Image (cartoon, rainbow, N blue to C red; front, side, top):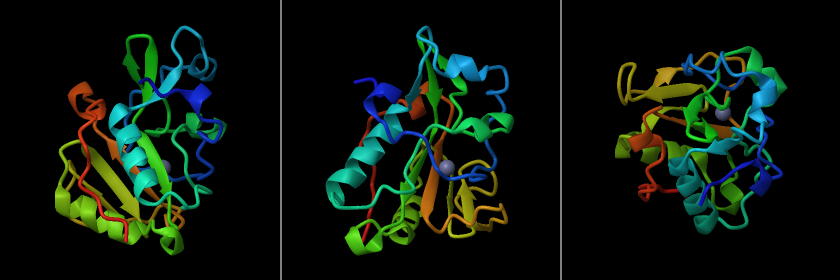
Length: 177
Ligand SMILES: [Zn+2]
């Protein structure tokens, strides 16, 4: 299944200034083409799988800070929330934000720990609670994150811009609570 904006009215991430170490490749894409019929945006399959797993494990969770495609402010900077990967008839977004809602079974601290421990080869980087880890920069080690959004309301997950990674639907090894 191809997951596009038309499937998801809450697709736009409400989280501003939330990306870091993002891909450079999006600058050539005009905002208008984000919504072109010729090449609409879609979410990477690996992140569709991850979100489905989170939703199944925590069906009552808040999605207040969820989102995958960047809003208009994102287009002015590098962000993996921009549909920066050209793939056939789609432009692919390679980042997902998931709301922290421990009271309803989605504890992003626990999720972040599971992701850094699991070292899933699809991960590019993860930002959570003023920290970032990457598979590329100082691999699989937490570093301080000083971006203006501290990432305490949501976790940010970016996947690598390699189709065998970003479109892999393999199940993730995650814990949420
Ligand atoms: Zn994000």
